[in-house]
Length: 247
Image 1: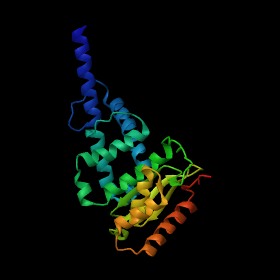
Image 2 (image 1 turned 90 degrees about the vertical axis):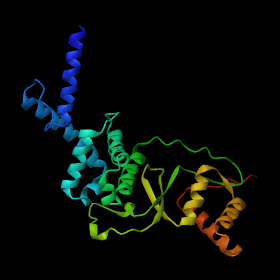
Image 3 (image 1 turned 30 degrees about the vertical axis):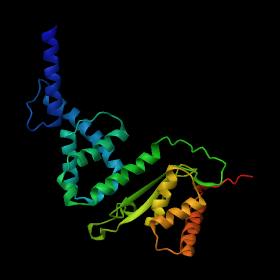
Image 4 (image 1 turned 120 degrees about the horizontal axis):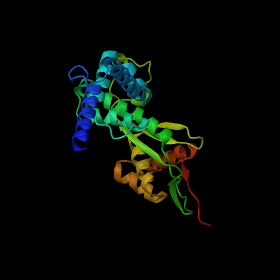
């Protein structure tokens, strides 16, 4: 029984190696036509998961380069999960972890892949409701993510071309609203910092005021008040701010 098990395992490993790299691996003792059908089905399924999650990256990159990335991932990555979300994440992590040369050739690509995957994540993740407290503090009503990019990848579409790609440092806030729609809002660097702090804990109005002055000490008291009022107005309009005054 030990010999049979060992032989089976060797055949299984050979089978898997051929599925990954049929050009260099010896063909197992199975009909080639059936092996090729199985490989095509498996490869096409993996590719479809990735293509659906990263349509913008796929449309901007030359097709030959995109297909090369898919082939490299299929051949070399060690996926830990067959789930749709996980495979697309593992594709992005594979390129980042191995510092694939394409990330140096196109310095915007890593940010674009991260943003496109985030859109899928926000569509599917179970977001816990925030427990609103009755107090004199300002508190976010929903879970938000504050992100900083060197390129405006959140504005790109499948119609974006190489000629339109230019570095534009920017910050955004993303969240899922009451209708489960993914929302995006551009932020100033100051607002990005303040909202990120609010995402960790509630702040009183005076604490936010002091925080602004500590970060931008050159602002006058009036200018600091204006920034604070504009922040509160923005978050209120977006229905992201809670302030339950104590009686």
